[in-house]
Image (cartoon, rainbow, N blue to C red):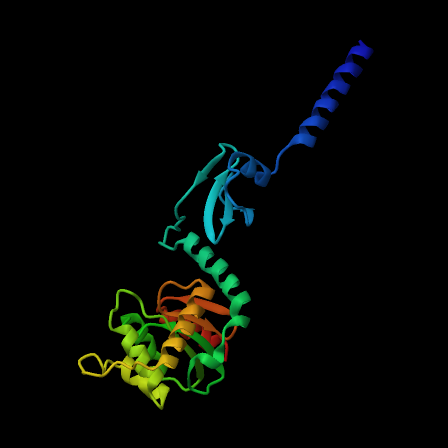
Length: 240
């Protein structure tokens, strides 16, 4: 009886050893089940059995128990998209690492305030104009403006070139963003240097992975995608 008990105990311990030794982590399970997915990071959520997977800037959700990938957004009961917030956080970290390569000397510089803002804008984007109006009422910002005329705004490129060819670019910027040129017949600037500068500005947006306007990077820390003026106001107020 004693020998039988000992044998059973050894068997149980042996099985426990092998089970523990060969247990897979969620990341290992994911890579085995979905070998084509590039995993930049994986972490548990506060939802039982679900993991957040970062893959090339995208967010996926993985259930190791069922070996399934879930695509989509997770919302709180008050309508906040936790997925979107995390995507912006991840994008901001990636952008922050690339900011050292942004040629600030090629931007249109506006203001001499203590808060430094790198901005990507489109002169015919209504939200960009709203942001421009917001900044025009402040004296506490230094803005480095880069232009990214969107294909949906066919006259935007000519307006950017108008700014680049002006003797006072900051003043020309204000004229354009206030809508002064919207109904005005103005001759498009054909200056080759202005066209090269526009390529540089578009290159900044490409470098940072920005595909929409406006975009703001505030005081070397926080990224704002879109015209979220309350959040921008909060950052400027808290960073004083």
